[in-house]
Length: 426
Image 1: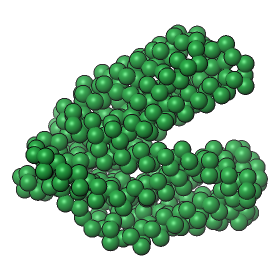
Image 2: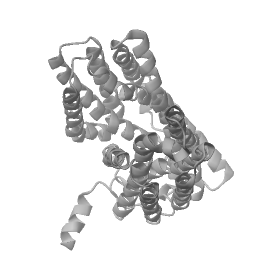
Image 3: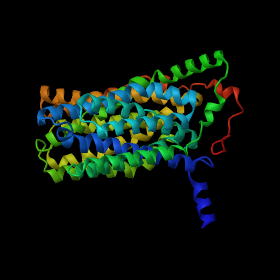
Image 4: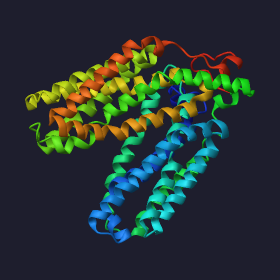
C-alpha cells in the first residue's frame, strides 16, 4: 500500500513533498468558500429581517448591503494581502486572515444592529482576501512548469462543489436556530484556521527575493512589467464571463426553453468543458497559453453571437457545447499564462493585484448584462458578450508580442541555476 501511494505521488505533476501543502490549501479555501457563499447567497437573504427585526423591504436592502460590504472589503484588500504574503510569509498572513474572518462571523452571530452586521461582513471580507492569492501562489510554486495551467485550474474547480453545496445547505437551514447555523459556520472557519497551520511558513520563491533595496526595486519593476499586459485582459474576461450569470433565470423562457431544458443546456456545456480540459490544458502548458485563451474567446464570441440570433431550441445545444469548449480553453490557458509571466519572487503580490482586477470585472459584469438586456432586449446580453469576447480574442492577437515575451525574475537569476522541470525545490 505504501509503495502504491508513493508511486501515485510520484506521478502527480507536483514537486516532491508539496502534495500535503497543496491539499491543505485547497481544503482551507473550500471551507472558507463554503461559509462565504452559503451565508451571503443562501442564508442571510432569508433571515436578515428576523435577525434585525426589519420589514421585508429593509431586510432585502441590508442583506444585499452585507454582501456588497463583504465583496468590497475582499476586493480592496486583495492587493495589500498579496503584498503582505510576500513580506510576512504565507502561514502568518493566512492565519491572521482566518482569525479576522472568525471575529467578523462571531460579531454577525450576536448582533441585532444593521451597522454592526455590515461591519462584520466587511471584517469577514478583509479576512478572506489573502486566501485565493495564497493558494494560487502555493499551487504555482508546487506544480511542475509543464503542468501549471492544468493544476491551477484543477485547484480552482475543486472549490466549486463546496460553493454549490453551501448555498443548498445553509439556504435550507433558514428555519433552524440562529445559534446552530452560526455554530456550523464558525466550526467550518475554525477548521480552515487549523488547516492554515499545515501551510509552509514561506513560499520557496520568497527566500530568494532580493534582500537589498536596489534588488527589491528591480523586482517591483519586473513584476509591474509582467503585470501590465495582463491587467486589461483580467478585467475584460471576468467582465465577459459574469455578464449572463444572474440573467439565466430571466431569459431561458424567452429562448424557448423549459426549466429542465435550461438545466440540460448548462449540464451539456459543463460536461464539454470538463471533458475537454485535459487536452486544452495540455496545449496551454506546452507553451501555447496565449493561443489557448485566444481560441477560447473566439469560441465564446461565436457561441454567444449565435444565441443572440434567437435560433431554434435544438440549435442552442451545439452552441452550449461550443461555450463549454471555449471555457475549457480559457480556464487553463489563463492560469498558465499568468503562471508563466509572473516573476516567482513577486507572485503573491502579483496574484493579489490580478485578483483585485478580476473581482472588479466580476462585480460589473451583471450590471452590464442587465443594462444590455434593458436596452436591447433578450439578444442584448448575448450580443454584448459576443462583442466583448471578440475584443478579448483580438487583444490577445494584437498584443501577442507583449504576452509572449518572457519577463525576467532578478531573484531567480541571482539565485542558483534553474532546476529542470520536476526537480525538487529547496
